[in-house]
Length: 135
Image (cartoon, rainbow, N blue to C red):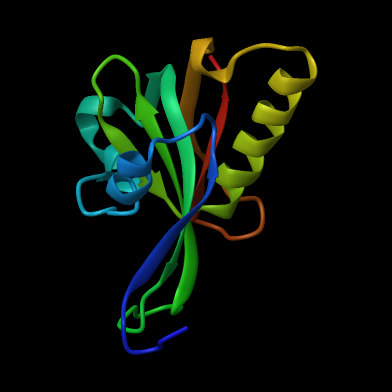
């Protein structure tokens, strides 16, 4: 991988993507940061949405302040079309558990409303982490 250039690649999608979508959705610049949306007083620390699409983008960004390589989970609201992104591992883990459970029982994840919110960390005082559950 060329370490001088930004690259991104979709590594998971909740549905098949067209070739155009595969290119379009690698661009995260037109997505809303989930952590900022959850701290917006208008949202009261919680978003409830039914996803029309869920996908993961692996990013290599040599100009990133924290880590050059990271993954973003993106969830698209079926009602508004807004795509929310987060690199939160706690969110990704909880969402994967939900998606796996829905798949086991044959339920389409695009029909299930999800509640996205923050909870206080038990390990780091004063810190919150993003999680998700079935609404």
